[in-house]
Amino acid sequence: MDKTITLAEAKAHVSALITEAEAGAEITVTRHGRPVARIVGTPREIVRTPGDWGWHGTYDQSVFAPMTDEEVWPA
Image (cartoon, rainbow, N blue to C red; front, side, top):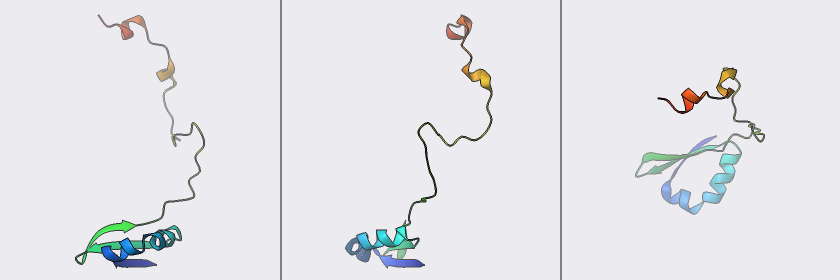
């Protein structure tokens, strides 16, 4: 469902191109016959919840330990 159009066509039909990209099309925009941009839809399967930064690995719990006075004010 890939499509190649000129910049002039893209300017004239941007709303329809966005609708096509939402449906899964990948549109290449050319200027003077050379590709200069691509219009693609964004992924919809990503569901974010407040406070979820996408980190699923393990980490050292000591990073939450309070700092000592020497760590805060080095000599």
